Image: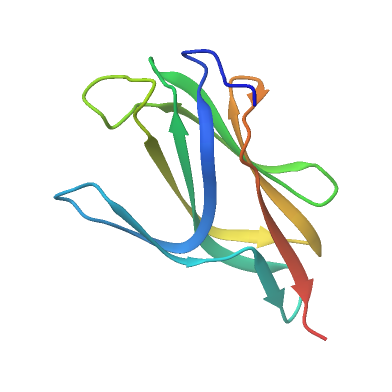
Length: 136
């Protein structure tokens, strides 16, 4: 197994879910309604959801991108952000959670959509797939 260099963000998970509840006292997050597929009556179908990415090995603020890629591999959603870790200090051992609220995203075609996390121009491991299918 190859480990990233210190300072290169490492994505340990990406989750897609219906809602996120955060305990203000502990900063713990509860992810509700995790899913990896959508069964639609017709297309396009709109869906609101959360993307939660957990990153470690951050020793400084890092430019990140969250992308949603459609079945033809076109990026249909890109969110640029700078990870500002929630810990008082940057640390290569602390896990930072990034929570993104996506409202009314339109899935236009059947197939597998991919949620990706990028550090600058480098994709990080931890892609999440969402399959969109029509009911028969």
